Image 1: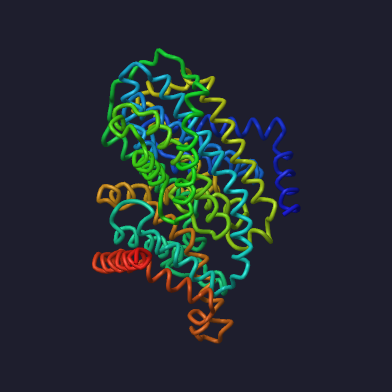
Image 2: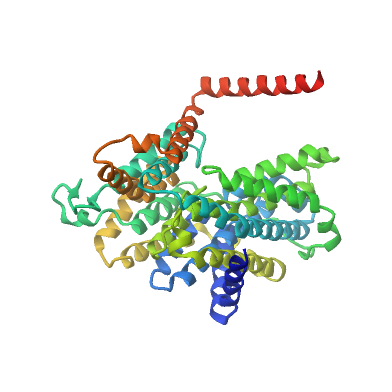
Length: 509
């Protein structure tokens, strides 16, 4: 424990310098700008910034990405309050009460409450990140090739719920990502697979062009195909939150913070789930239920606390197990891999200090959004007046430059364009790209672990099923997929209700 505290202190001290603070503030600032603009997402922001930070030192690059991640979700509350359009999906729960307050002439007050909730929620999540990640990673150190195979397979199985409501579409996109991950030379014997004699494919589909195409170029096409313009509510009152008003909702902050972290720990449950579950929890215990949806401070505080606390919650399994819980954390994990840091059970051996560095980075991001939220609200809102016809070509230019800069290959630009166009049409049909990226990221781990395990066992598949951790992971994976079958889901819920009734009737007796 003392060693962990020492490493945590070292991480905080290492980021107390001019450049680290400047990178953190810059990343949060860019994230807030992206979050303010409806239609853009944290995933897009992280994907674009990954290309711009390729040549930077790993810690500085990840610092910018984490700060932009936090900043984007925080910035999304601006358009939710002033336009009634959530900047990101996670801010949808803030629309009802936030915009209702804005229509009453209390837009500044609503933004102040959102800032307070975001700061408290992220800070609560940081404490959980520092406490739970090393402990979870210690347990995961018992993993070998067999366990890694099931861990990767479980991650792909969770792609059924990472976004959207249709698990079949999620699994199909996850499987497509696995197929794309097999293209190129395989890792053990350098044999070309699925290249069809095309030398450019020998190196496989690079992660950065795939990320930019799936989230950057596809986003540009989607937004330009359906532009939305809405009137901006004018902000006339102060944005500085009243301390007494914030303090009286401390129970809401703790409850929503816990809900956000717990939803973040569950792979496949996004930040929007943390916001909505926190909002529902606040409404369930509130004495003023009739105010929810009509300008409730409690509801707005719960929604913003819940979605922001889920960010550190998503980072915990990402670092400790190598399983991202949401689309932005999947791209963040891909960026870590690109910079030579492999998240997962071996993290505490290969990069033990990095876990605590991430805690310090997230803390700096938390302080950054508080600073911008209190003192730079009005200048940041100017970005809401930028026309999309001006903004989207700039994003497309950045995407093209980023795809080319990753390896200085024109082929990567073509790959980005092809994947982007394909992603655009797939999104029109309800297929989301996050499972595809998750399959692409985990595909290499799954492939190598399967073949290494078969080599170690002389071709036997028994160790994949008989080792204790493998057996547990296999059961969890199969059960997770079966739960998406309506009949099984209803049967499990009925059995759980019967057992619950039996227990309580026994106590009553």
